[in-house]
Image (cartoon, rainbow, N blue to C red; front, top):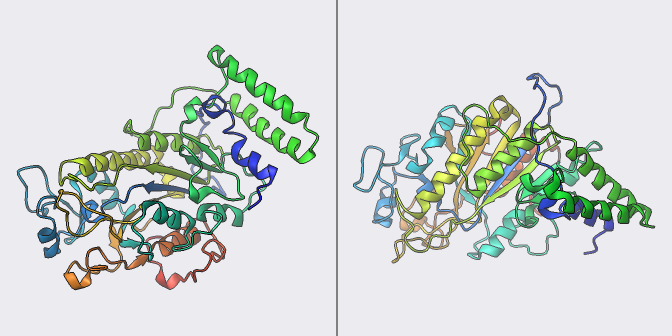
Amino acid sequence: MSISRRYFLKNTGLSLFGAAVVPSFLRRAAYAMEQPGRKKILVAIFQRGAADGLNIVVPFGEKNYYSMRPSIAIPQPSQRSESGPSAIDLDGFFGLHPSLSSLKPLFDARHLAVIHAAGSPDSTRSHFDAQDYMESATPGVKATPDGWLNRFLQSAPHTDATPFRAVAFSASTPRTMMGAAPCLCTQDLQGFHLAGKANRGAQLLASAYEEMYASASDRLLSSTARETFEAISTLQRIQIGEYQPENGAQYPRGPLGKSLQQIAQLIKSDAGLEVAFAEAGGWDHHVNEGGVNGQLATRLKDFGDSLAAFYNDMGDRMADITVLTMSEFGRTAHENGNRGTDHGHAHAMFVLGGPVKGGKVYGDWPGLKDHQLHEGRDLELTTDFRDVFAEVATRHLGVKDSGGIFPGYAVSPKRFRGFLG
C-alpha cells in the first residue's frame, strides 16, 4: 500500500515533535446551550486484554453462573459475602460488579446501556488477531488496510476540519484510526506546547522544521507543512492554564482517567473534535482474577469512575456525545484452576451518553447451560459488534450509507438493538 506524502504529514506532522509542541487547551468562552449545528461526538474506548463480561455485568439470575465460578462469582444483590459487597441489581437478572457503583446513577438516569453477549463472530482466541478484526470491523480478514473509524471519517469529509477532528490517546496510531483520513495520536496533550523558557529548545526545533518544510520544492509537501504549523501556531495562542473539571467530577489518576479528562478539554475548547479514541489495558486475568475484590475489581473501579467523571464533567454537552466501550473477546464461562479465566468469546459492551436509551441491558441472553455455550466453554454470541458500531454510526454520527464503513457486511437496521433513538 503506497502512502502519499500528504497522508504521512497529516498523520504524523503534529506528532512529529512528540510531547513538546501543541499546547494543552483549556479555557473556552461562554457556552450557549442552543448552539445550532453542533457536531456529534463519539468517544471509543478499547478494553485491551479481553475483559470478563460475565463478572462485569453479572447474570446473577443464572444458576449455572455460580456453579461455574465457585471462587470468583459475584454474590447476588440480596446476599453479602465475607469478602465484600454484592452485585448491583440492574433489572432483576443482571447486576453490575460492585466496583462499578459510580455507573449505577447513569444507568438509572437512562443514559447508560449495556449490550450483553456481544462481540465478534470470529472464534479466534488470539488477542492480536481479535483486536485487529474488531478495529478494522472485518472479522477473519487480515488484509483490510484501514480501520472502521477512519473509514467513517473518510465517508464524511469536512472542509472546515481541524487537526483535532480525530484524536487517539495512544502510544501509536491504533488500528481503528489507521487510514487516509488524518488522525492526531498522542498520549498526553499537556506536553504538547512550546510556551515558556523550559521549552525553548523545542520551539527552536519546531521553527527549524517549519523553515525546512516551507522551503520544500514540492508544492504539496510545502502546503501540507504550512497547514500543520498554522495549527500549531493557533494552539500556541490559546491560553494555557490548569483545567478544572466541572460538576464535581473527579477523574482517576490512571491512564484512562487522564485520557478522558483531556478529551473533555478538547471538547470544551471547541477544537473541532468528532472522534476520540482511548484505551485501557490490564484485562487478561488468567490467574487470581478475583471476585468482589482483586485484580478485576481494581481495574473496574478505575474504569467506572473514569466514565462517570467524564459524564459528570461534560454536563449538558453529553446531549451530543456517545461513549462506546469494547473488548476483543470475553473470558471463559468456567473459572480455571488458577482462580482466573481464559480467553473466551462474547462479552459486554457499554454505551453511554445523552442520546442513549439507557437503563436497560440489551441483547438476547443465550444462557450458560453446557449445551448453550460456545464451543462448550464460552458465552455464546447473540449480537455482532458490527451491528453495535453501525447503530452508532448511523443513528448518532448520521452516516447515510454505512456499506463502505463495514465492507463485506450487509448492515441492517433490523439487527440494531435500539439503544439509540
